[in-house]
Image (cartoon, rainbow, N blue to C red; front, side, top):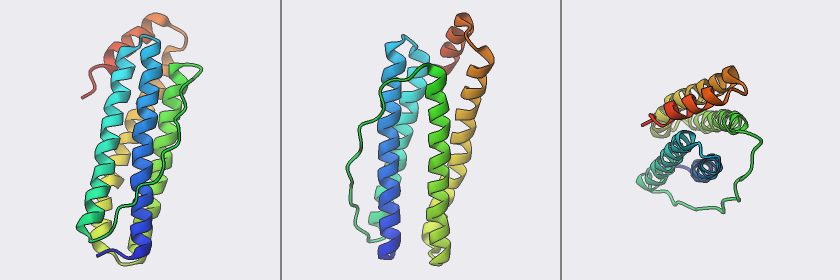
Length: 162
């Protein structure tokens, strides 16, 4: 069983995961508008992962006899200067989510809530992967600069993401 304060933190994280999903779908729509279907695929894959993360929080809260409370999700940004800016925002967002997960983990540790710490351990590891994937895209996009041919090649590579 989780405490009321932990339930509140977990519900807030659940909402952040849903908001992340919505933001990535909007980014995918932007990429599609530029005919960058590989980047759109990468971002839609990220969108689905964030939905799965939200559901993990949903299920965990219920498994701990807590109550899920869903909050409003704000409208995501729809326009960017470039696909490079999109992935810079992806990286910034993943860093924000990492900090957020760490804060919930620290609260679980302070409460000696070992079940929640164990649950959150998966997310701590997942965020390492999430940040690394976003950083790789930012680095590659920075390397290619304004080269349209290289951008199209990288777009094709992004489509391979599972």
